[in-house]
Image 1 (cartoon, one colour):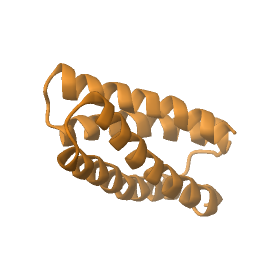
Image 2 (image 1 turned 90 degrees about the vertical axis):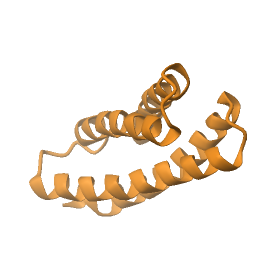
Image 3 (image 1 turned 30 degrees about the horizontal axis):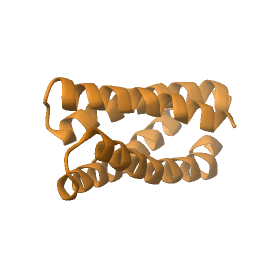
Image 4 (image 1 turned 60 degrees about the vertical axis):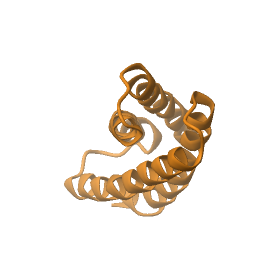
Length: 120
């Protein structure tokens, strides 16, 4: 449950910044999504490490998380950009693209963190 609460809060930050940058500042969708991703995943990692998994700081874990986040970054930005190019560019379709991209990356993230990273 803690992972879900943390993920939902981080997703709100990610989505909010993505929409502000994409529609408020007219940045390309991939740049807006990249910035949102960095904010959301940084907050998620810090909260998950301390609250969800109650893990002490670890250099090995940090490196593993960076690698995982690079993979989920490529997945999220790739899916979001692809869907943004095949669907009309509206806030509603951007929301759908965000949910699909975020959902895919969240599943990958949870499985790898639980099975590997927070066992280090």
